[in-house]
Length: 192
Image (cartoon, rainbow, N blue to C red; front, side):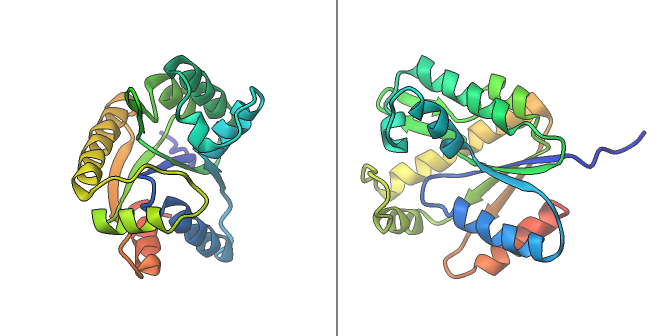
């Protein structure tokens, strides 16, 4: 049986864990080694779709009705389907005013067909500090126990996504001032 070279790697985690920073560093490293792949930020692709309906920013998008968010997720997923190596920067769950929205419901997972699911983690106090230092977003303030609960929900969602798709699950810590080690661990665990 011939092994497919396609890799669809979902890198999820809480807002403030450093997903985009880690993926930017990973991109630089792999491109310098001559490797080709694409990186998508799921929320940005969703926002591009939402802007067609008059939505202005990602924080406003989080407040949309469930059905509208579900439709945006599906439209975004269809834009990312690829037969090569792709990384998708996203969240396993999104806290909303009416509960937790699955970041990767079954219809999105079926469209993306992930081969690997990564949960990027950091200490709760680091996540809070990073959120507070991000002037580009309007986030509600939370405490460490809220962050711990969101990490638990993300782990549950990643497990469910793995059960639906058969994708390998991996957890990687993004510790403060250890970006190179985080990238190295991702490369090793994902066999890149």
